[in-house]
Length: 79
Image (cartoon, rainbow, N blue to C red; front, side):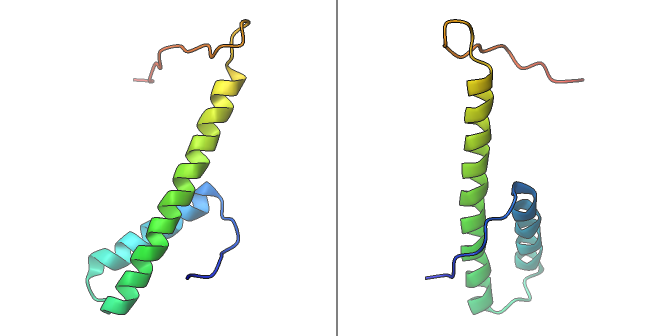
């Protein structure tokens, strides 16, 4: 079982994922190390998803209407 790492910010996790992808794409890493990198990446993806879910829940909580129900509005992207 891998060692527990200290909690990273979303940005730190994303940067590490980019490093892992670059290493995997090179194709020069030994198989054992590739597997370790893949496992690390899978854990980072899980952590990033948790952080994004938490952020989404916070936004929904902050945007509740007067009746306590989420006040959903269509997303308007800047063009």
